[in-house]
Image 1 (cartoon, helix red, strand yellow):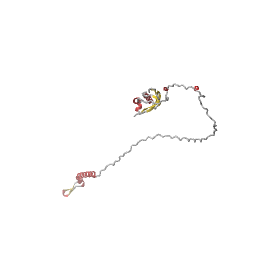
Image 2: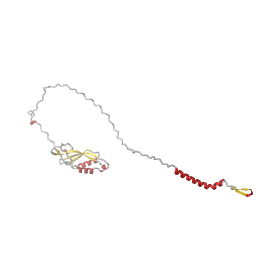
Image 3: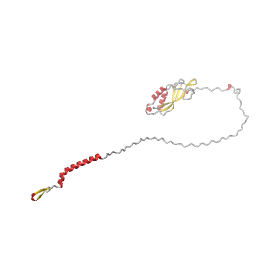
Image 4: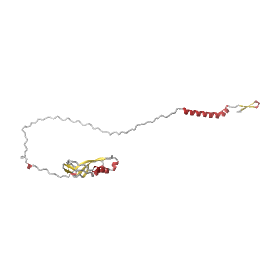
Length: 228
């Protein structure tokens, strides 16, 4: 018998076991413990100190790449120059009676003088040569030359940022007109050299003067192409 035990006189006495008492009070203990646990957890979250993460961020300076110059080979020092010899005055016997014969027109008549050299006409336009002048030719159409520089600048080189300087020979006649041009010093680019010659044909100058006379001259002028 689990719940009741028979006694004499056919009387039954009910006796509750511990297991039955636990089963009977299980629901009260379970929900009571759940409520207490919930209150404890909420209290821990409510009164616990607030915790924040420390800021570990950092900044770094931007690194700049430095291009080192190429190594230059230092030439050896020049050889020592030999010390010049000390001059020595040599002994010389000079005759004090030496005289220079006088020069007179009687001894050298004018009729016997040689004729002056004949002037040989030369074509100075054939190649650059020096021509004396007292007043240099001056450029008369600067704005037109600037437009020609912009127009003749090769597009491929201009878009690539490539420029250069061409030294051009100009042959300017007595009226200030450019008759011939040729490259004196190249820019290193054939297209720029040809563009400089095209621009050179646009130049107009005032005539060069040698005293009161107009003269034809060769002058060398730089033509520069650059991207601004």
